Amino acid sequence: MTNGELSPPPRRRRAVLLGVALAVAALAVPAVIVLRSGGEEPAVAAAPTPSASPSASAFVARSPEPGDPPEIEMAWAGERITEQLAVLNTAMHSGDLARFVSVTQDKGVRGELERRFRSLRAMRVSGFELRIERGPWVLKTVDGRPDWGVTIAVDHCFVVPGCDPEKVSIDMTWRETPAGFRMTRISAVQLTKNTPMPWEATTLVAAIGSRAMVAAPAAYASRARSFLPAAERAAKTADKYVLGPKPDRYIVYLAGAAEWKKWFGGGNADWVAGIALPVTTNRSDIVLRIDAVPGGYAEEIMKHEMGHVATLAGRDYRLIYDFRWWLSEGVAEYIEWDGRGLGAYDGRSDVRRFIREKRYAGDLDQLGPGDKTPDWQVSAHYGLGFYATRCIADQYGHAKLMAFTDAVLRGGRSPADESPTSLGAPWKTVSKKCLAYTKKAVGA
Image (cartoon, rainbow, N blue to C red; front, side, top):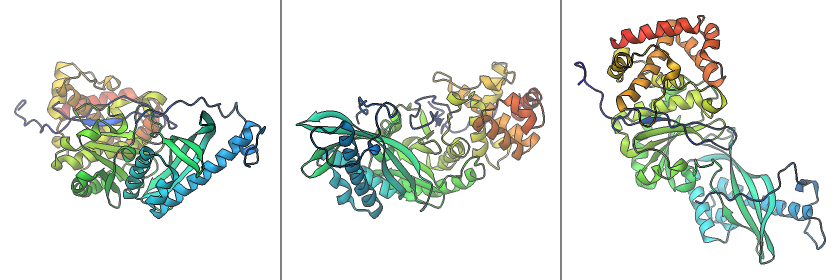
């Protein structure tokens, strides 16, 4: 107990893992929930850049003959690889596993393809298409035959027919054999160190609802089904706060201990219970550490993380804009506590303590806990972001809060520049008013 109040149960506190940047198109920062208690990397091919090499498509794709320029052989290889990609595309859509793995003679690659096939089919992949994004180029020669490297765009989305696909990129290696071109290597999705994606590394099952999907290793199939109702309720809440395109589904992965150390780079600390991070330029997915999420609190945690998806999907505010930690986390807390009174907020006593002991004077841009920040101060940082966000909604209106959030987090505007436009008051006035609001709310 603290000052006569019951401390909230040791279910979680939130902190930001400012980590690995995506290489797909926009770098990205994961936002996470934390507990209160606290393949092989793709080879770098010696490939010419597109601007430095002739385009294979400029040449007729015919069978190369001795003395032909390299571009003829490139065009021929590109056409043959495209034919094999069409086999993969057709097999994925029709559910033909045997045909999907027929493009390789390598046992290891076959296992990689089978795992991806089963997982993506379980997640009801739609809009699936593999296409050459860059290449081909000669990596090396084996027994007189070249190994061809290509970068492949994987267009995909889930569940919704006719959806607008998102793109990730992978590297492949192909070799001409007597049976035709065959895949000899497939890389993880190109997310720098933040890879592999769950559907690449683990054979998944999925429970799918009208607004959410919960995917998990087969051992946790029953947990995925039991989490789905809470995910559906959380998604219904998050939908009210969407600032960009509405997600087709909120995708939640449940990770066991092994998966937590493997998926998306596996660099998450043991005290982290959940994380939402971008996987494409427009989509963010959620991972929950299943042994750290009590069933009774799953819905709250998913509301917070889906709040990040609804407001931040696919963006990196620290690297692209002046990152506003307090607002990105504050609005996620605001969404988590949707419809509940101020007195229910579980970080109240920690905020009061922080204001008193740290002589907090309202500088929101100084918030953002680090790895060594004590648990109670982590809670206080999140709480201060929550109360500031809630203050703006209560004092200026929910619509104005969301317009302000959109302009600052998605549009890159500073609070000082945007406040007069969205809120109709100088930021200095808003900050002063919200500090007084927070002190009153926590009894400081």
